[in-house]
Image (cartoon, rainbow, N blue to C red):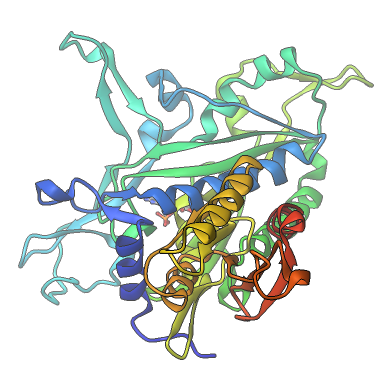
Amino acid sequence: MEKSENLMEKIVALCKRRGFVFPGSEIYGGLANSWDYGPLGTELKNNIKQLWWQTFVHARADMVGIDAALIMSPKVWEASGHVAGFSDPLVECKKCHQRFREDQIGGVCPNCGSKEFNEPKQFNLLFPVRLGPTEDSSATAYLRGEIAQAMFVDFKNVLDSSRVRVPFGIASQGKAFRNEITPGNFIFRTREFDLMEFEYFVKPEEWEKWFEYWRGEMHRWLIAIGADMSKVHEHEIPDGERAHYSERTIDFEFDYPFGQKELYGLAYRTDFDLKNHFADAPYKDPETGEAYYPHVIEPSFGLDRTVLVSLLSAYQEDGERVYMKFPPRIAPYKAAVFPLLSNKPELVAKAKEIHAMLLAHPLPTAWDDRGNIGKRYFAQDEIGTPYCITVDFDTLGESHEELKDTVTVRDRDTGKQERMKISELKNFIAWKTYA
Ligand code: ATP
């Protein structure tokens, strides 16, 4: 089925109405391009983070994780090349004086259409912060502009405290901060955002093999989060356009409603970073005793862009019905429980029992006893709840003894209902939504 027009507007509206994403600082008139994740968006985002950690750290023998400070010594960013080179070309329109990132506008002012700009200046994206009560410039530090540096800076500590051997990876998740010239497009480009990344350390001569391997794994991940793969494209970044640390980069791009743009990056960072931070080769081959600088493959996953792609890919219209076809693993709720009628205490009591049983499992489960069943299905479809469980008079065994202690379970995608024993519910939902 063809996806609807104005998809972006529909997603932004649905996100606000149902509590996925709200405009930041809204009651004070908002803060441009800042967004808060609401109750359901937080669940979706956390589920994606957990699935990522499960996939790339817990399920592997060759990966360990760290959780590093957001404010790092300014020396890190000097050594890494970010103070000198982490910048975007800033141009100012001569006519309307608005400022833009030169590589994003194709020579035409998006505001007034003029083609005349001042000479581009390099604008550094690092956010300075002042530490402590002094005005002294030596107390200036930076919020991290990428999360990768900690995985290089902590490299020796990880080696010395764990049993990792090349090839192995160090993974991390968390916020990065960039003073973007032109943020925008909802959660696509903001000044603070969440990243999920790992640095995978390999023998220098094996980098190409691992680059291909991680390229394949990134595809598998995209399938796992339900990305519409017909909209995913790989883009090889040519010489001269790559980040200062990279010898090869492939961007994974997505057809967003506002154009084909970057979703993830896969970079071959060579030994650039370890050489910047360590005067002596930090790794010794346990077999040959040779000391060397491992080379690095870095798959980089923007979490907010992942949330956006999962929302855009999940959105389905089916006649009157809108449903979010999230893979059950990342859906905010795994199930919802309803009493057929809210004014029948026996039905409500039984439904509450089932709700409590699923919550205790623990399976995130919604409760709804408002309006009619059709409206409740509609409301759960719109937030992507895979299964709706209804307690009716048959559950109480009022007319058919053989149906006692059974409920209806409705499937989000097909709309089909089946009857199931209450005693089977827990395993069924768990198996279907965590498999
Ligand atoms: P762009 O060219 O879009 O500015 P980039 O090439 O600078 O991105 P990287 O440095 O490769 O981006 O960052 C790694 C990942 O972080 C990107 O693939 C993207 O998913 C995410 N990302 C980068 N900048 C932002 C931002 N301002 N807001 C949200 N996510 C971002």
